[in-house]
Length: 389
Ligand SMILES: Nc1ncnc2c1ncn2[C@@H]1O[C@H](COP(=O)(O)OP(=O)(O)OP(=O)(O)O)[C@@H](O)[C@H]1O
Image (cartoon, rainbow, N blue to C red; front, side, top):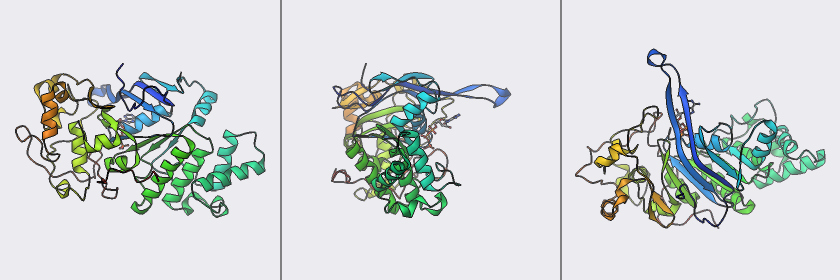
């Protein structure tokens, strides 16, 4: 089987592995109460390795959160399998779910929603410690709470344990949700847009914290984001998701510096970049992501693609290797001439022979848009990850 997803070194067993992960939702209602199937996630392969940050990047509605929920066992896949440390996962019943959740923790976008507003943070952290380490004495529980708070740089602990969620800032709450995840000593953290609701000024601190924890505690970290610039900064490996499918994967550096899928190029050209002032100008992107209840035939990106060919309209592209551990689900790479055509076209200047009229990049207001937060870090031009020192 072709290694899709984000596999870098096939000799190492991933902590968490997904193969063929697919999720369909049944929609009821509409015209004549007809049932329809919405294919939110289609045939996703993903490998998460210990100590490594992997990013999934995609627009709103592309299926990123559904992948996280499937990996967290909050939803059952329609098809596909998940392995933890090489063993198939089949969670039936609360006991098995608790054991799984102790290894695989999910951190959500909105830290406020993930805490009970009527209990103090100390109460909620102690409870989490007791669930994951029932053998600890009350004194040891208190010590453990102090430890996890120190790990997320919330010290002294007494300043935080007696407060209620609403008495803390968004950044402090997100650090507390990370601290609560740490009470389980997880092997995997699934961070679903962990900083997108935080003030710009504190985003970097929370991302740095997650990266440090992944490195120090050998945690496999999945960073889900709509922001390709932050993925380059933060992740070693990345995959781009479009309309439920992973369309490009490789090292975060490679896919942001040498994107080989037209959709990745679109995301990059829409990202703020001080070295590329034209990036904030008109985008040659006509259209929006498709309705997943009625996706386009062939390549799902073809209605928006400036490089579209006849084949793209009829036949879904397979995965083509486009570099070392770099791949792309795009028919252009079927021939060297197609690859060369893509490479020769400047990022924000798609093939004029086939490009539609230039349109202004959509403002990030609707449910489906190219999200390019102005607040996110811009693409660094030195190719360095700012988090590794
Ligand atoms: N429970 C559900 N029932 C029906 N459709 C759903 C359900 N959950 C998600 N979807 C649909 O699946 C698609 C993918 O949703 P998902 O939340 O995974 O996307 P996303 O990329 O995480 O977007 P966002 O960044 O806005 O959260 C969307 O079209 C969404 O409307």
